[in-house]
Image (tube, rainbow, N blue to C red):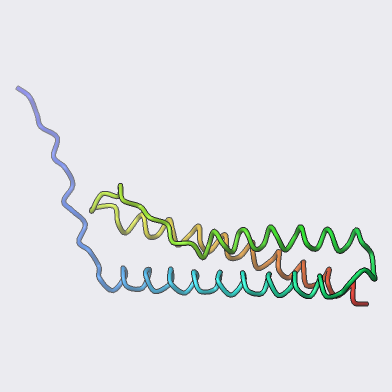
Length: 123
């Protein structure tokens, strides 16, 4: 006698939760766009500084800002996922939200470091 394994019933979709996650994803994407703009402003300020100050500090600041802008670009870019099962949409959205938060937070820390480095150059 063969027993068939019973599957779990589908998890009901909570539209309020999905809307909340989608709103947060949009908010984080916009934050990353702002971080990208601030990074560009930091590079512009570094270039306007001219040749005075420590050349090594200028180069390292540009390196930190470049890394920050790359991460902000990753966070601001829309990621297309066509291979998501309908039953796993919520989990996929939560994973994307988690990674966007992580990317945004690292980019923010790098931007603060770059601003501190730029302030040392002005000093």
